[in-house]
Image 1: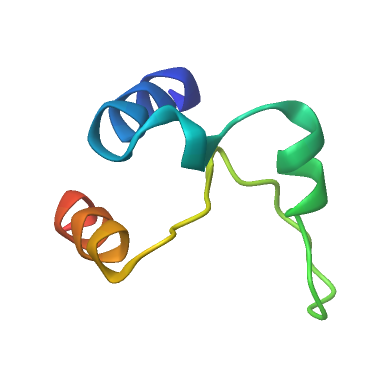
Image 2: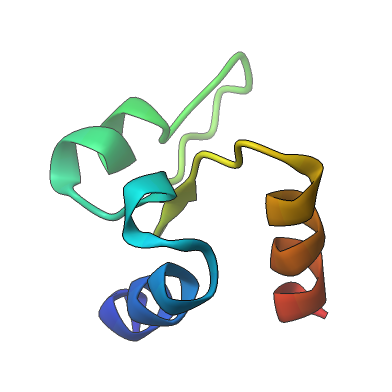
Amino acid sequence: MSTNLASKLRDLLGKEIVASDPQTLAAHSGDKWFAAHQPEVVVFAKSTGDVSKLLKFAS
C-alpha cells in the first residue's frame, strides 16, 4: 500500500518532497506522545499550494 501511496503523491507533488525511505519514516515515527507509529509516507510541503494539493488528495 505505501508504495502505491508514495507513487501517487510523487506524481501529484513531485518526487523531491515525498519520502518513503526507512530512515525518514523512522525519524518521523514519534513525537512527545508515548505511542509511536511509523508513517507510510512523509511529505515535506514547501508551499501552501503543496498543502492544498495534499488536502484535496486526502479528501
